[in-house]
Length: 414
Image (cartoon, rainbow, N blue to C red; front, side, top):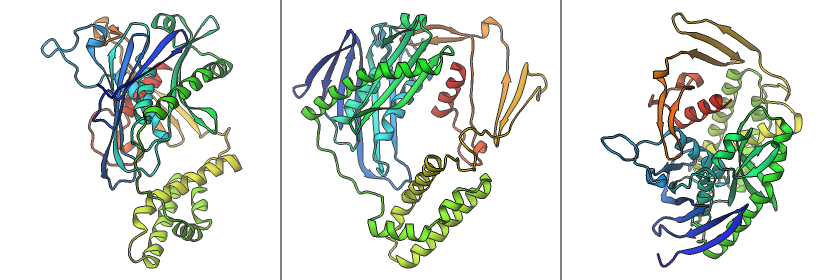
């Protein structure tokens, strides 16, 4: 690997080492080591432009069994299979950290792959994976407005700790992951993952203040690396309309879209928004018979809705259904809906319903877990499902998605 470059700083009381360009065919790659835990990150973007209305980003995180010097997995195959829940949750932490910094109108397949290659039984690989993803994107030719930094903060007897060890996390009452970017020379938190034993809000604020100098240190460190090794970013065709077309669309919309968004009834609001969009498309089809507006309109229309919703909140202190910030939807709860199960309950907030069903099992029903940082049994299982009909949609039923696993774990942690 003749083209690799090495960088090193001390973060807290441990060395942080980076080796850049370890996978030369990838758009950008790096090996990040903190203590003796190391994560390989590689980011690549396809040259093919997709006809979609969303940014096709995938983040894959995997922990190799050899990272901990263990031989795990099925006794008949002895190798890694589908991602575990823990791997999916770590991948979601990285995804939520990096996704907001991509151009919103980028439409090329982009993939970030992260492998935990070594684990030292002290340092969690999750924040290291986020840093590895950030650096691999930063030095790549992929359009991205990073870098981001990520640290973990723990607390024992009121004392905050940077990147606590597993032993320290077990003893503490707060375990929180912060991800941050730098905007206008200010470190801005853009992702939080918390496990806490009912600590107060002030404890979270203290953790934010404690983390920011370290986040700044990591961002500055990455900027130096990117300046030394970064590739020129690819140019891509923006999906936003040109200034003349944008002005024409805004003149047509006037206040009609804002009025539609302000509708208090959910179904009526959606109907009105669709009617505004259809009227806009009909008008543009007449004024632009060449169809030049089509590739712009969906993205721009969604951005206009997003802008108006935020203005409603920041300027009028209202949500889209007219509620103030401190108003909640009608709440109701009922129990024992279902026969035979050990317990059941239905909780309702507005049009959102949650049906919860409880089963009690014997000790032999515990789940057996094997991973690089945990081998044992789990006695509390909290499963969450969000079928397509929940949001009035029709989709393929393909098992639990990452969102369902993530939200289920949020409830379980709570």
